[in-house]
Image (cartoon, rainbow over all chains, first blue to last red; front, side, top):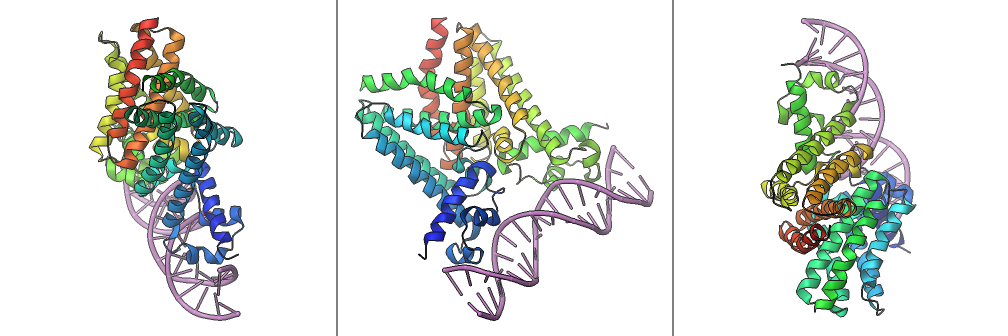
Amino acid sequence: MASDSRERMVRSAAYLLREHGYSGTAFSDVIAHSGAPRGSIYHHFPGGKEQLAEEAVRYAGDFVAAGVRAATRDDDPVAAVRAFSGWWRRVLVDSDFRAGCPIVAVITESRLADAAAAAFRRWQDALAAGLVSAGATPERAARVATLVIASAEGATLLCRARRSLEPFDDVVAELEDLIASACEEG
Amino acid sequence: MASDSRERMVRSAAYLLREHGYSGTAFSDVIAHSGAPRGSIYHHFPGGKEQLAEEAVRYAGDFVAAGVRAATRDDDPVAAVRAFSGWWRRVLVDSDFRAGCPIVAVITESRLADAAAAAFRRWQDALAAGLVSAGATPERAARVATLVIASAEGATLLCRARRSLEPFDDVVAELEDLIASACEEG
DNA sequence: GTCTATACGAAGATAGAC
DNA sequence: GTCTATCTTCGTATAGAC
């Protein structure tokens, strides 16, 4: 299959970006992790490392948004939020607190702000849809979704620094009532 | 003054880390920005770049914590939180949304997690003290302070991606009631 | 599509003079 | 304390064969 290795490279890039950042993830690392052939990098990604990172951000954005949407199908009002925060928990624990969000690496180390904003926007839309279906007004849902994304990203950084899930648990505990009341008011 | 250039280097490193990250901030950049003499880098920082970054994180941590503590002296209950979020707003606007938090760069690109955790801890203590003096219980104040730090860090990343203050404003708007009610319950 | 070899530049670190 | 010169490593990107 021709483009199989290409997709593996994108997935590996997203995986490695979470732990080593943009500068810290070399092509050779992506090759080694994905098992893709070395000689085809610039065939698949003529735009070089930036293009690979851009597609990795898009991949991660779609992956998480799809997970949130899948969780929204149930009737549980805050299932989407739980699916979202659960995703980060797993990244932190599975990596022993060494990995975080690949999009953060791209924001702080490259010029791919637009790709990052697009991914965040898809997360926000997916989360807000879940909140609206649970009773929140569209305006409030959009704001709360932004808060959920921001605090999850920030809490992930705090957890990486402290090598502990405690900051994440504290943040989620504080947000629970806020989310519930946003769904009740609508 | 012997150690004047040393301190300038630390300050410049903190400044440059916010915009270009750890890998993106070279010694030559620090030299150029601080005006410090090139030949004395390893005299002042025998531990190399890691030591410089570690001190930059400590500097930024102290700087922000001191600002929060100064704002706490007034009687305004949420003055500390406002001072804290105001600091980020200024970083974002002054840099045209290119800069963020230097500690984030260090978390995602180096092995200085402990220094980052220590800086965050000082912010948390300063913010929590302000909330306690405004009426919150110590336990709740600690959790809310963590939420404030996490959401400010995350919102800063969202603002950098979108090149807009809107995410930050949305987050602050959502947190206001939560902070007020935390101070009333104590 | 995939390979090897290599050009090219960047940056951290060291040595030794002043 | 500060300087210059250099060593060394690494990583992106390109060229050209298969």
